[in-house]
Amino acid sequence: MTGRRGYRAYRQGRMAAANLAVLVLIVVLLFPIYWMLISSLRGESQFSFPPKFLPTHPSATSYVQIFTQKPLGTWLLNSTMVSLASTMLSIAVSAPTAFVLSRFRSAALTSFSIAILATQMLPATLLVIPMYFLFRTLRLLDSLAGLVLVYTAFAIPLSVWILRGFFDTIPRDLEESAKIDGCTELTAFLRITLPLSLPGLAATGVFAFVLAWNDFFFAKTFINSQWKWVVPVGLSSLSGWYVLEWQQTMAASAVFALPPAIAFLFVQRYLVGGLTGGAVKG
Image (cartoon, rainbow, N blue to C red):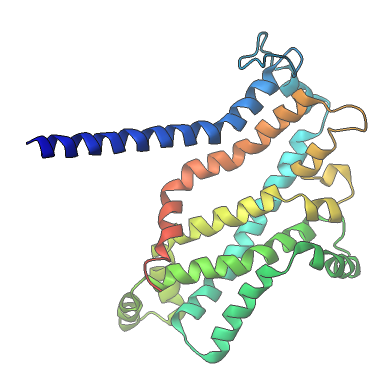
């Protein structure tokens, strides 16, 4: 009896320690977001000792200023259009490519799949100069369409591998049954495989969207016109040589973080299944 009680106390202690560890982890992860929000609402100085964890005189003035004094709305629209376009384009290219690599095996396809993964290992700084000259030849500099092509090219390799792992988990018997009922290879893919791979598509879409949404390097290199900037480039313009507008920077950062948070909220149910689905079957 004493042994059973001791084991129960041991399990309760482990559970309490695990809950405490999770609570500490949540606090650590959420504190930067909390600090960003209260910093954007401060009406007083950002710096004080001891630090104030609640604003004394909260004010939404900085949110009004970033939309009236800065073209944040235009930058948000540019970021949204570029991110959504590159996401849809990368999925449209990656899905059929991953399906072919999943369903057909040959030395050429294996070499191709390894080659596209190897492109992910090339640093962006190595590619930016040849891409700059290529875009200048194609007249895609200072163009949002050019930015879409850049993000699509960088999202495709890993998207193909994510979707290939997910397609491997879908039984081929379903496609064979569809072919017996009159479907072709293409219609079986569109009507059977693609709907069943919705979690994998969601995971791939989130990856491609965040990749484009957070980029600063290529956007700063290829876009010059202020009205074509995306939000990361616009945020960098809020800091001058001698002055950094903390309230406006924090307010713009909070607005910038909102769309990805909403996207994660809607697709998180599919995202977990999509990221783990490819790990079930090798």
